[in-house]
Each structure stands twice: as C-alpha cells, then as structure tokens.
Image (cartoon, rainbow, N blue to C red; front, side, top):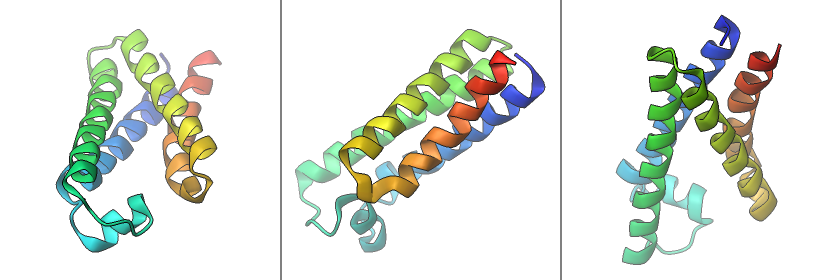
Length: 117
C-alpha cells in the first residue's frame, strides 16, 4: 500500500474515532444527539443504539489505523471499504445526514482509489 493510501486510511480512521466519541461518549449532549437523531428524544433505547454504533465505528478505525501500522494493507483497505459502504448506506437512508456520509465516504474512498494506482 502506497504512502498516499496509507495517509487517507489513517485519516479515515481518525474520522471514525471522532464519530465514536460523538456516538458513544458525547451523545447525550443536546447538540450532538440532535445532529444524529434529528431532534428526537434521547430514550434509553436510542442511547444504547448510538453507544453500540459508536463502537462499530471505533472498530473500523482500529482496523484502518492498525492495518497501516502493522503493514497489513488487506486489513486497512477492508476497513476502508466498510467505511465507504456505511457512508453510502447512510447517504441513501438519511439524505439529511449527507455531511456525515461524505465524512465517511471521501477519506475511505480516497484510500481505496490511491491503493489501486
């Protein structure tokens, strides 16, 4: 995996660490929960869902960053492919969250494209 792909994979990982923090640590803050839930009340079920989703994003970040550090492109690129897929699903299912979707799609997609060339 070339240096450009590694850089984008690392950046994608950092973005997903940020998403983890928002969903699993800071979700109960009104401005954070409003951004993710569209203003719906933060019920215990929604909080549990966001907490779980945040860890999913953390595990993807660990895969991307760990794959680069361990010089294992398959793990890093698989994690980036999952990030890209998750961003596409987010965009298709919640168009109002397009900024968050692009934050997932662009760095991961750039890593995958850079790895191809």
